[in-house]
Every structure is written in structure tokens, then in C-alpha cells.
Amino acid sequence: MPAFNPVALIGRQNGAKSTELVDLLGQFLTARGCEVMVEQSTAEAHGIDRFAGVNYEGIAARAKLAVVLGGDGSMLSAARHLAPHQVPLVGVNQGRLGFMTDIAQEHMLDAMGELLEGRYSIEERTMLQAGVLRDGQTLFSTNALNDVVVSKGTVGRLIEFLVHIDGEFVYDLRSDGLIVSTPTGSTAYSLSSNGPILHPSLTGLVLVPICPHTLSNRPISVSDSCRIVLTLRHGDDAQLHFDGQPHFELREGDRVSVHRADNTIRFVHPPGYSYFAMLRQKLHWSGMY
Image (cartoon, rainbow, N blue to C red; front, side):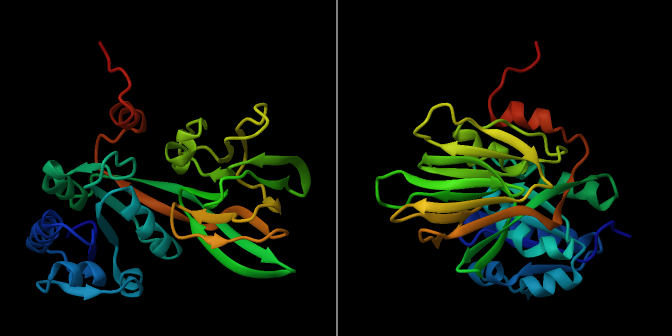
């Protein structure tokens, strides 16, 4: 009996290579006794009809594992859809860095064979819940795996907002924006803004100013039990982003509330996975001599 069954395949929406990989992996899994379903838009984009096309609701209801063939963006999208249903994810890297996609394309079948034989580890990752409050009403709510970002839009001026943590005033920040990042997101936008790398096992969040006007405004780490509220004071074109996805337009006086989500996402790692080895490889740190 395979360790995971049924298995859902989620791929990129373009590229002949993606079609080839999804079809190859689907046939491999079928030969190992797995029922295979392909996420509906993936199946339609690649003309795959060998396996059942299923929407995310169907995957959430039945799949015991979702294999994402793509980059970190594909993993982020799948995580937001599937985290409330506790469907674990594993990634086959078709992107550039691939901090969340453990399996290289050339090792895909070997690695999947090991997972099906029960040789794997599972890691839970914190997610964020964010909402926009305007005049006492919640206008927008979403979850995110990497980060929630308040930033200036197309207008080339600083924005200003108040930062409160658990109801306590922290500072009045004038900057291009602020990143609230999970440990998973600490190697994403946060890293490029000089934020620290947080190990995924840490129960913390990091707040990283983007080009602050006062250079003493530095990144700070807080417990992930905190509730963070950002109140926009000035900003003609301020926006809210989550995991780099389409934004919500903010107005002066809007309050963005960010806290740890009730749900976590579960990553499945193949044998030999090491977070620090991944960092060495992706960030081109020196190896052992």
C-alpha cells in the first residue's frame, strides 16, 4: 500500500516541460497503485485527460498528498488553498531558487518512490491571517504563507502608518512600506529588505521596514502569538499585498490587522532533507572543505 493515496498533481499553467512532468509523474504514481487527480486548471492548460481533473475543493476533500510541480509561487498558491484542509504538500522544483520545492526534476521519480514507501518527514509551517478594517467593518481578509506587506503604490512618495502590537504603540513609521513575515517568508521579500532569516521551527514573526526614512528603524522579531495592527495615516496610493499576490487598495485611516492563522501548512520532505543544506545551496554559502 502506498503511504499516500490518492495523490493530487498541481502544475504550472504554461510550458511543454510542465506537461511532460505531470504526465510522467502521473503514470509513475498509477503504476505504484495510487489514484491520481490533476488540479483542474493544470489539466485544462496542458490538455491532460489521462487523469481526472479536480478543482481545489475536490483535492481538499480527498487527496492525502498534493505534489506541486513549479516554483515557490506555485507552492504558495497551493498552500493558501489547502492549508485549511490539512492536505500536505511536496514540491518538485521548476522555478529558480525554490526554497520550498525540495525535489529536483532529475530526482523526481526516485524521491516520490521513497515517499510512497513511507520514508519522509513532515514539517508544519506557520501561516498568517490578515484583514482590512475600514469604519469598523472588515472589507477584505486573506491568509498568507510568506508575508503580508503594506507598501506604497505607483506614486513615488513615502507612506506613513502607526504600528501597534497587542494594543501597544510601537512607532510611527514613514517608509516605502512594512513586511510582516513568517519564518518561511524570511527567505523571500523580507530577506531582500535586510530582514533576518528565521528557522521554520521558531514561533515568531518579523517586522521589516522597507526603506525607512529614519535609519534607526530596524527589523524586529516578535512572538507569533502577537496581534499586529498597522493604521495608515498618509498614503495616496498605499496597497496591501499577500505572498506577492494581487493587492487591496488602502485608504487613509484603514487598519490592517495581522496575526497567526489558525491553520498551518504541512510540508512533506524526502529523506535527507536539511534546512541548512538548502540555505547553503540556494544562497550560495560556502560549503564544507
